Amino acid sequence: MSKELRKKAARHQRLARTPASSRGGSEDEGDWSDTSASTIDSFGSVGDRDDLGSSNWEDDLKQSLEDLTEKRASTRTDALAKLNQIMARHFVAAALQSRQQELLELLKRSLKKGGNGEESLQAIRGISLAFINHGEISAAEQESLYQEIMPSLRVCALHDENGKVKEHCLQTMAMITFIAASSADTLRIMEFFFQLLETDGADLNLEDIPAEDVGNIMATILRGYGLLFASTYGEGSGNLEDAWEELEKVVPVFTMFLESGTKETRVAAGENIALIFESINTHHNLDDERDPEEALPEYDDMNELVRALQLLATDSNRHRGKQERKEQRSAFRDIIRTVEEGERPAERLKFGGKLVTFRGWTKIVELNAFREIIKQGLHHHFAENDLLQSIFRYVPVSDHRSPTGVLSGSGSPYYGSDDDDAELDTGRSSPALMDKADRKYLNAEMSKIRSKKMKNARSGKVRF
Image (tube, rainbow, N blue to C red; front, side):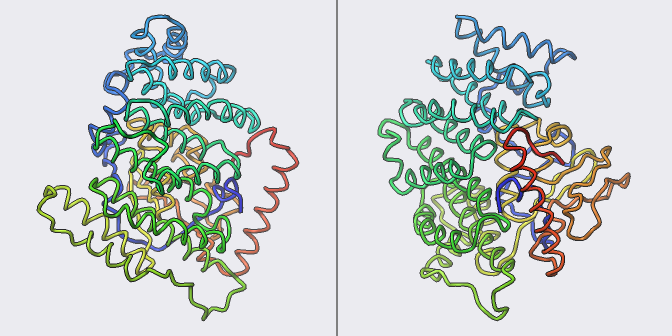
């Protein structure tokens, strides 16, 4: 199943515990109290801590683009910060409809000129936000923009002397690949990330990078790999044989990262392992031709893996801070429940007074990737941005479209509710829980979508 079709399929899984390892949302719309200072500061403080100061953000957007052409680096940096704030807090696709190429050229120039690091960091985030705000540009145009910017990001990641710049180049490579790349390019970047992990970042020239930054870089690569694995194999995408082959290749390397001195790296490695095992279980459950009594193949080093995960779930190492131990134990309790028992975690956020549940590691990994980049503006994009609405099957309460339409396995799409206690589940109707007739119907509908997309010859995007 292609990535595009997977994003349109209805999902459902049983209620499970909320993973403490994933960032939790505030009960108040737009109040992301869990966003750490390091997450905000990593992209600079100018753009995300001040209000827009003008109700006419479109004028501010145009002015920011004009200021990006200035020679003074400080002027460009301030313009980037303002631009990023606007793109994070508004869905700007219509305002940028004819200027996407121009914007990308300006961002690429700032990436290359950002000698003080801050301009580069703002430009890198701007690239991610620009792709998130693409809207209904043609798939061919989006692919062209992707191919244009990726070489610059790769050079930046490999050769820039600033560890934070390297880290966020890698993060943006993962995000725009998730959004815009073909299946072949997605696999290519997954392999690029895996080779960096397998060699401890040998090609990244990390010799003069501070140890803390190195840990963050490796954690970012792990999360980037996880995001692309989720889009390639998560929730029934791809096939079981390929997913199992990937498991056998990468899990031994991820297991080594469980011994990292950085908590973020240990948790990212553990979450990838849980994501992979969850995906294998989903593929196995979706296989209509298998013998119901046939067991899953067993990972050769399963006992050693479980012991390593259990050790981290019960870690009492006094060399680590109390809060670090608490967060790690909570994270790995969720991870080990997936690996040992097949449980799928759930995370809940409230948008516009409505509770939204994200089920399974695939959706949680994807959610966290967008949250890391959009930050405080996430609820605006869930309300306005078709990209996030299609990925997470979210429909604003005021919008009476079906989130799944004919793809709803239950035949009962969610239309929103005036009840403050109403809950929208992004995993409402998983193929794994459908009967055989429902799965055949779902597959037939997805075949129609595939035929329509082929007929359009990538001339435009399919919308809900």
